[in-house]
Length: 215
Length: 215
Image (cartoon, rainbow over all chains, first blue to last red; front, side, top):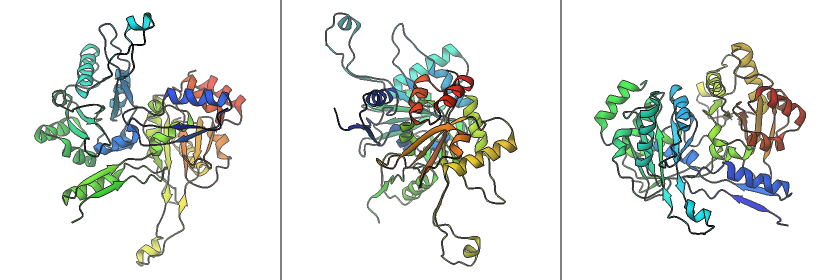
């Protein structure tokens, strides 16, 4: 019997560390009476504060999965809407496909894996705008403020850019991992001051803050 | 000029790491053209997943300050209510008074500091119930499920206990630091299964889950 199972939060910093996989691992270990210790580490859930938005002002975190030709899930739209109705920010974690098999390889039991894919901020925004176009419930628009974060926590490679969803759509954020934050309109003036460091078009930013945000 | 200001998230793990103090520090450094690097660490914001609730299902985080005889702030009640209306969990960070001066010592410029004080889970619950008694908007009741966490992240000293607010009121959680989670009724069955490990009165827990939670 394993004497001690140390469950290390490896923190591929863009991952949701404390989700179902970890709970499942711990529950199964407990059933086998294997003692467990958790060692915590940094996570996107707190490191996201680096963008200048305050963690107090975030609502529910969501995950955005890759659309396929016939699978375009959008249940997270309701979560964004709930957050936005309260004026809260939404942290969007973007899909990661690692060690995935094609349906054909899966069916034939061939352990051949597809190339890893990591959703970019641009892909996420495209999907978000498509969903809003379909749902038309005004959870956000192409002029809603957002923040794109790439390689968060990397001392040399981190990029943070802020602007409207439309502006960020054409920005290059480089290699993975990417995350996106949709800014809620309860944004505090100190948050706006801080975010401004990451904005290219400061005039447009000021205009939208004045028009759409309660500042 | 300081060549590099490394802003270390020291993570007294019950603290809100990424709040105003840090933003202020960074903004002032930037104004002085001092380069900044942030090194992230574990935080209550993600480590709270240790209680078995999923981070996706948390709403806004709140802070509960110590009541005084003539200062009994309750604006966080509205935040809890917003979360609870959506069925979301609320992480409550409890007040810490360190290096505080009495009003007399402050007025006389005497650098004499009070003993440090750390709010207990029991004190937090007492204040919460007092506020509900006054506001009567049913954001929660004494039978709402909650989880008390003490010394989160300590491999040997961590305590997690779950039950109704009323049940936790009389539990002993030991020395600081303490945090409290108010459980939202969108709780998933897997979350309930996990939390049950931390429940003393499992019959009462099952009864309330069945009655008040959407499971």
